[in-house]
Every structure is written in structure tokens, then in C-alpha cells.
Length: 284
Image (tube, rainbow, N blue to C red; front, top):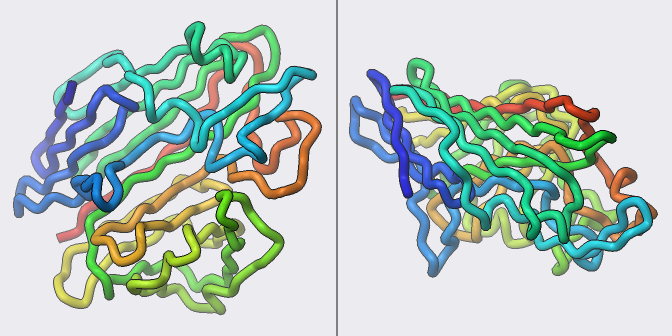
């Protein structure tokens, strides 16, 4: 099922399956800013990644001495969420643990996802609630795909010196670091820029990145919410780019004894909540 919200400037739609954003339209111009999905290219639009980002080594991890199997990007994106509350310009969805999730992730949890239109911006807030009597470990990430064309460009807020970590065919991080920016802020989207999978950055000085084009004046200013890792990805040559704030990161080949030791893992105390966000502002 699909639910919609709108304000004076924007209209957004979210489907209950995975609480996935499926449309972001300017009411002034009628332009759709979100990739509309194509199974022949990539069927996703804006999946939510929980409780892992990317892959864990051999698709297995250990927690408190027990081994579990976890699929790529976790399970949130492949399960239905329930509409929790809705107003004219805001709506919140929730997923809760059940017997099936506890077989692969043995925690009691609630994950709330709130979509709110504020002026010409869409703000998406993720709230992870720990319903256990001990610390809960997790990663969470967003994966929105915005419509673009080859030759469009991404501009960081500030000049950056950034390397991307190389990814192997198993979607695991390697030790190889590839230079991308050297005191510069522009990444041009070329046909081959994602031939070796996503660009994965950390240590950014910027708080936002802007998607723009030399062929028109429209822009998307994307605030990545102070995330520790930012992924940028598309299928090579496709007419979209994913801007992915990650509170976590995919595994390397270094084996960890426990899920709590996973690189960039997040934690939330018993009965507490953890909140993060991203925001996309439409500039026309």
C-alpha cells in the first residue's frame, strides 16, 4: 500500500513494503525527483538498510557466542512496515521484531521512520528503539536514488580530500584506498564511475552535498545528517544516483569475534532510542 503527504511545494509517497520512499514531486513544476525503478536496471528506489549495511563476512556473524545468518543490507527493506501515524505533511512507519527476525537478529526492537515535508525539503528521520534489557548493536542506513543523467555533478559543501575504499566481488571492503578528491568538491557522474561498485567515504568535512546539472538549474541539496560513512552509487550508466548516509559500514575480510566489535557498529542502551536523519531540499 502507498501513502502520500504533501504541502504547498512538494508531494511525497511511501509504500508500506520496507517503508520505502517511492516518489518526491515538485508541485510547482511537476518534476519527479526520485528514480522510479526499473527491474531491468535496478528495481529499488530508497531502501532502508537495517540492522547491517552491505554484507557481513560470509553472510554470518556471532553475537554472545551464537552464530547467525544475515542477508545483504539486512531484512528491513524486504518486510512490510505499518503506518504508525499520519498528518497532512508527515507520516511515520514502524517495523517491530517478530519470530522470524529473532532467528537472524535476536533483539526486541522497534524502528520508526518519519517522513516530513518542511517547505521545499523532505526530512527522513530513523528512530531505533531498544526493547531489551541490555545494549543492542545495529547499523542503519538510507539508500535514496535521485533521478539524474550522465554528466551531472555532485558538489560537496566544502573542499574535501577523500579516498574511497575498494570493494571486492563479495561486496566486502578491501585494504585498497583509491583517491577521489584532493582539496576539491566536485564529483562528475560518468558512465564508468561506478564500475567498481560504490564510492564509500568517511571523514567528510561537509554536512551536505548538492546534485546539479549544467543542462538545467534544478538542484537537490542533500544533508546527510552527520553520518560517519557516505555511500554514492548507481548501476553504471543508469539515470539515477544513490546518496547513502550510513551509520555503519560493510565488513572487510577481518574476522570479528562478536557483532559488537563490527566496524562502525552503533549501540543503544536498554529501553533507549537512537535517532538519525537525512534531508533533501529541492531547489528550482
